[in-house]
Image 1: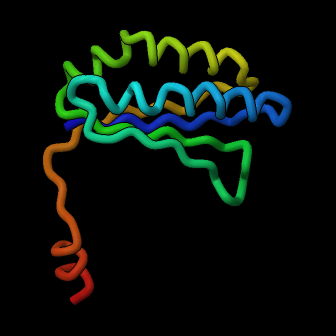
Image 2: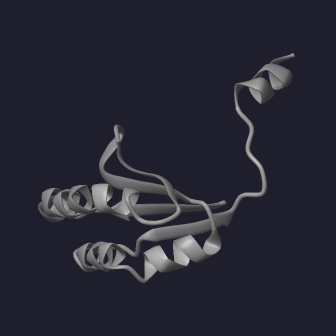
Length: 106
């Protein structure tokens, strides 16, 4: 599984426009092959910080997404930024859930 985390720091004057662009592509991204999930979050302590979190079944699926029209729209929105976006791609070997939380709390 692959995880993509993108942090955009939007200039206040462009925040609404960037959020509209992201909102427009979330649904189509979720329909791309291999997309496990795709969400956008706004930092409640810094409203100009926008986070996009994606999970992909394989590296190839993520690669196809990065070459897609939808990601191209995101790249276009990034041109409105005054700060370089923070982008991380992580390979995930395994995941656990509440069962691990219970073990760690003992």
